[in-house]
Length: 119
Image 1 (spheres, one colour):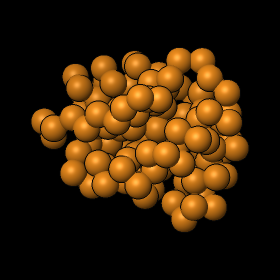
Image 2 (tube, helix red, strand yellow):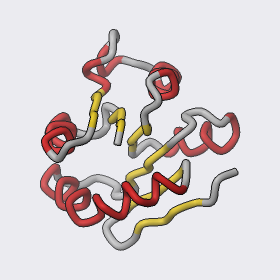
Image 3 (tube, one colour):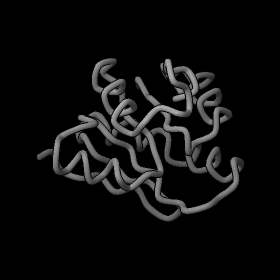
Image 4 (tube, helix red, strand yellow):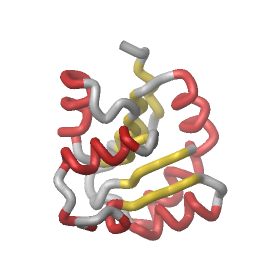
C-alpha cells in the first residue's frame, strides 16, 4: 500500500509499515514537515495516490464532504501508546489492506475494522 501518515501518528509506525513492505511517507517528510496543514496533507496524499492515515476526524469530514483525501484510513483509538498502535496495525494489517482495495474509507480501532462503501 502507498500510505501517508499524519503527524498524529508516530514515525516509528511509518518505519514499521515500511519494513513490512509498504510505501510509506510521514508528514515529517513533507516540505513543511509536521507543521503541514490538514489541507497540505490531503493534497499530498491525493497527488501521490496515497491513503491518508490519521487519527484526526476532520479528515473524515473532508473525505465525506469534499472527496479529499480520496482514500482514508482513520485510526480510532484515542490517546494510546506507540506499542498499542504497532500492535493494532499488526493485528489488522492484512484486513486493512484488503479493505482498502475495496473501499476508499476504512476505520480501525482496538475492537473492530469498519469498511465503508464507496460513495
